[in-house]
Image (cartoon, rainbow, N blue to C red; front, top):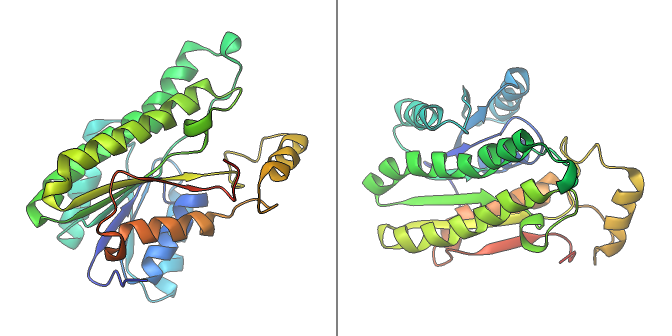
Amino acid sequence: MTSFSGKVALVTGGSRGIGQAICLRLSSLGARVVVNYQKSAQAAEETVATIKRGGGEAVAVQGDVSQLLDAQHIVKATTELFGRLDVLVNNAGTTRDNLLALMKEEDFDLVIRNDLKSVFNMSKAALRPMMRQKYGRIVNITSIAGMVGNPGQTNYSAAKAGIIGFTKSMAKEYGAKNITVNAVAPGFVPTDLTNSLPQEIKDGLVRLTALGRMGTPEDVAGAVAFLASDEASYITGQVLAVDGGLT
């Protein structure tokens, strides 16, 4: 794997789960890491402490990425601290599951805002330093729900499908500026967002997976690190499913 030595990576929702695993992987490869969080200050600081114990360099930056002003603040803090921004991983997101007939309008709006608009906000904010450098790697975390749909998740599936369209369009807009934009679509990975699923649903998903097991945050982190690396410099606008063969 290409070294990230000298590079700066910003991971939204980096304090727990998949985001934390991405922070740890990029740090282990030499990146200086900004761990963005909204509310989980303790978890973010623990992630930073873990990175520092391993000899890496990291800092936690608070901000609500569903708000453009916050997104701009997070990117500004990153460039003021480290002088540059090379890798943006748009990982932050949430769920509010329900059948469409029972779904509240505010639950639809909240998921679109947190999962999709956040990608717009952060990517827009990151463009200025990346264009100035003539270098950037953006990796968006979508989901197989955005590719094949999922009952009870019309809001989440719509947001994640939107990320795929956003990824492909942005890739075409900024490829000439040496900025690649790709997406990773995890399958069933146990995190705080999936812990509430009934056990029979979890067992059913595993049965549908070719590899016969659930994924891990580290499985996703490996794919993100590849797409963010110089080894993937000729890959842009792509969606990589990390789903054990589920799709």
